[in-house]
Structures are given as C-alpha cells and as structure tokens.
Amino acid sequence: MTVELIIGGARSGKSAHALKLAEAASKQCVFIATAEALDDEMAKRIARHQAERGAYWKTVEAPLALCETIEAYATEANVCLVDCLTLWLSNLMHADCDIEVETDLLVTCLQQASGRIVLVSNEVGMGLVPEHPLGRRFRDAQGRLNQRIAGVSDRVEFVAAGLPLTLKG
Image 1 (cartoon, rainbow, N blue to C red):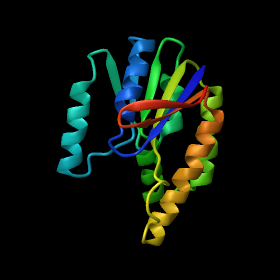
Image 2: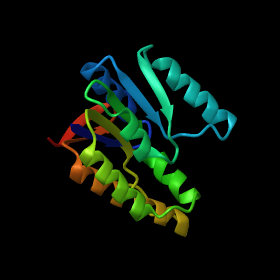
Image 3: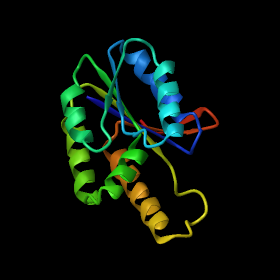
C-alpha cells in the first residue's frame, strides 16, 4: 500500500501531475471524483477532464462516500486517484457532516487500504484570511485535513506552476 498526497493552489498543475503518477504506476486506474455537476460550468469542466483521461480510466463518483469507494476499488492491481479532497470537504460541510469523524474514517481507510492511492487537495491557507466566518471555518478545516492526510501519506508533493516539490518521501 502506498498513499501519496499532491497539494497545491488552484490551477497549479496538481491534478495533471497526479494523473501522470497514476498512469505511470498502472494501466488499471480508478478516478474517484468528488465533484458534482451542480451547474453548467461544472458539468463542462467535468466532461473536459473525463475526455483528457485515457480509455483505461474507470471513473467513480463519490461526492460523500469516499471511504466506501476507496475500500471498494483500492486493490493491488488498481491505482486509485481521488480528485479532490477539497471538494469532498466542501460536500461534507454542505451536508452538515461531522468533519472530524469523516477525517478519522478517511485516515483509517487509507491506513488499511490495498494498492496505491493518490489524493489531490488544495492548499488554501497561503492567501488572504477569508472575510466570512464560513470561509475561515473551511480554510481551517482544509488545513487540518491536509495535515492529517499528509501524516499518513508515504509521499507528499506540493505543486506550483506545474512543478512538483517533494515535501515528504
């Protein structure tokens, strides 16, 4: 079992880097999508990303049930790519889930999973302090989530301007 966390800012190249890592490891790749097509712009973005992936990619949508999806698809033969933890966290907050409980479940799931798992997440704490309480709550929860996942990851890379920098591993 190998867990890799790829973090970076918006449009930093982190997802493209994660795709390359997964494709280099196996031709049996499972893309675990946490995004939901709630508007036309997001539907177009999702369709564009699906078209960019090779034919050997299987896409599974998991806006909330991330642990169950990882447990179902993480095998020695598969590489699972979760894109992204930031949208998963947002979905959890909108569904009024207990973030600490869900994070604990994800950490345990990753520690027990088989195969290789690559997770993508945004680094949101390097900019301005959000003006609204919900934004500050989200930023803080994202920072804690990233720290927890980095703690159980074998490798952590930060991507800026398409360039990966190894932080761990």
